Length: 117
Length: 286
Image (tube, rainbow over all chains, first blue to last red):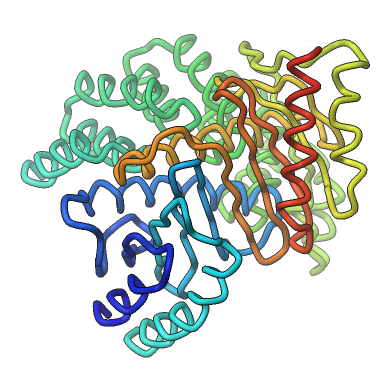
């Protein structure tokens, strides 16, 4: 799985990637050096708990994507079947383009995870 | 048990989350440490005020200490803050049964079914109470007995508790700030929330639903900011979640107010952002 994350890191605007379980546990990580991956995964776990509550209360269906942004960059979390792909994005990233470029990676990760389970 | 407790204590210190607090409190209580469980619950209620389970555990502890009034208040506050707390309604129903207030007990059990339509325990308990007290089964239960169960279609009623968090604007001019946003095709409803997760203005969202969305979106914003902080990014300005059948988008201004929009999945976020920013400007002017 790390090979896919490393490839994804080469996409313009991507500043690091990580595969997280729904409970906020790290499954694979290719983050920048110095980033606390456990802390990030735990925060994303909390985030998923909240977003799932919103989805179930307001009949939004299964969570497909989440993104949080600021002027200095952001984080995109994409559903990959049984897990979630978190992508740290640089401020220069074009979100629409990034969405297109990450789509094949999301499909491949989903495929691998589905086969593994 | 001891090692599991130790492990959880450390984990809660390093990566606090509502579910970890709940588990730690339950383990501590099961190990006979009511005081530690109480401390854990109170800390959880402070850090994750919308986590209903902490209130339920603490209410059980208070009840076991003979402090029934305190337990009742805790449960009411917990349900108001977490209106989908199944365990909260169940415990409240038990307390009502103890008080011989059967209608209230059944009402609480019906709230459980409104949240969890196939909850076997709640269904069985309603039937048992109705039979024991000679109450005619509700039409829903009767339909269920005839093989066409409609139990679980109960509407979730807004909970009337001791705490009111909404500070809705009373003037028409403020609600008008959301008119343009809600007039966009595909927008189901919207609200403006203050930094504490309280509703300031709301439009097209049912009573109770607006406060719940405000509270949940405030929780999500906190978690999102925590995740951003880990990667060195401050000042969250927008977040959006997309589900298979809809989306929620939030736009912030100076961290003081946020516009939360509930929309169809087809709506373009860029267009909504313009409207939401205008709403925040209008609100500032108001």
